[in-house]
Length: 61
Image (cartoon, rainbow, N blue to C red):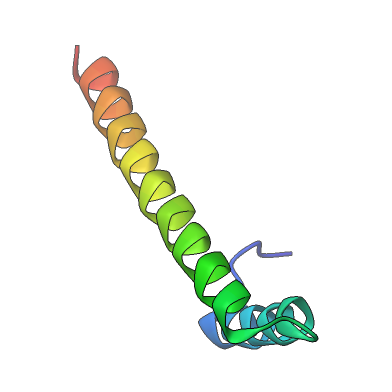
């Protein structure tokens, strides 16, 4: 079985999670969480890019 799921599945999952998390929160709280999750995503992208660079350097050596 393939582990590569269509992107639409992730979009639906993200929307469902956002709805559940935001239920009952104020707009200010949602803004803060939005910024936090954006920051987490940006940091994950940096970590991934660095990891790919290190892996490609070690495989070409």
